[in-house]
Amino acid sequence: MNQILGDLIDKNISRRVLSSICIVALAIISLDLIFTILSELSDLSENYGLIDAFLYSVSSLPYSAYDFLSYICLIAVLVALGSLAEEGELIAARVLGKSDISIILASIKPVILVLILGVLSSEFFIPSLSQNSEESRLLKQNKISLNDGYWLASDSSVSFFKSTPNSNSIQDIVIYSLNDSYKLKQVTTAEEAQKIGNSWSLFNLEIMNVENGDKESIKEMNWVEGPQEEDFNLILSPKYFSLTKLYNNVNEEQSQYRQNILLLEFWRKALQPVFTILLAILAASLVFGPARDHKIGQRVLTGLILAFSLSISQRLFESMALVSFLSPFTSVIIPIVIVLGLTTFAWKVKSY
Image 1 (cartoon, rainbow, N blue to C red):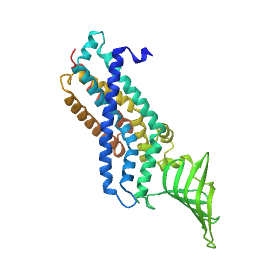
Image 2: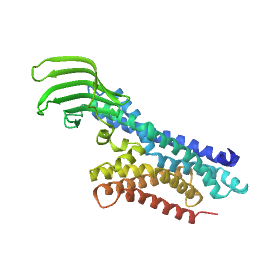
Image 3: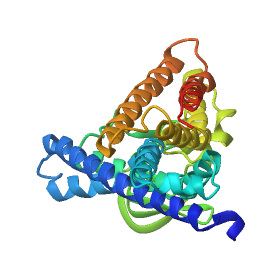
């Protein structure tokens, strides 16, 4: 365990970086929550009240935190190592035999821990939560119309559903059943459908026979022609897909445009740990180099400017991948190369 955590000096550095990550994350998430609530105020209505806007804003925080994770670590490492330098603890660590490399490695350990938690959350927790909150918001704002819902065709029916919080739940379903001549035979409406095991069940149904006009109400019924797993690949937003789901669906997608979106999301999520670790090394290099004489406020400002600039460049290259010849992998790797170049430069001019 000591080989992983290091000695007392390494533990102290790691502890300071981890606490700094928590403080910076809390500050950024709080600001994001405030701005999200303010942006939702213009959409308030009788069905979508202030409490709904607040709940949506809170439920969107995990995805925002994961999206900002790289820049949170950049600012946190810059602030933590900067404060250690101001207090003379980095000089003391060097006197006790710690090299700059070992100090950087100690500061990266909590970053790796946070990255592991982020990757696990994006794989198992964030996708369903984000999709559910987004769908619920659109429903309450009445922004999902017949043109915005989802259609599903099978051999004997055509189905429409208004909302799908996740791949195991569907809301407001209308099923148009066809006869052998492909003429409308029956219209079935249901409040919701739930996937239990490998089969779908419809709840609170009303079945109307078009031929004789008879109506029947049923509490629950099996949905034999319910959507399969691959049908949701065209329904759920790719940004809410987990990394494994993105990997599994890239080669199955026929549309080149949507395939580029899937590839872009895949490479962005797959390379985020690399990007984050490089940003942490860049922050440490700045403390040893160009920003070594800056006060903590100046370091925070430096980190914010770097994060803002890199975020804009990242979004710019990602947009180019969707509308130009730039491949999704290239658009994701270019910001990483930029950070690697900045890190090399900062390391070369650092003070010894």
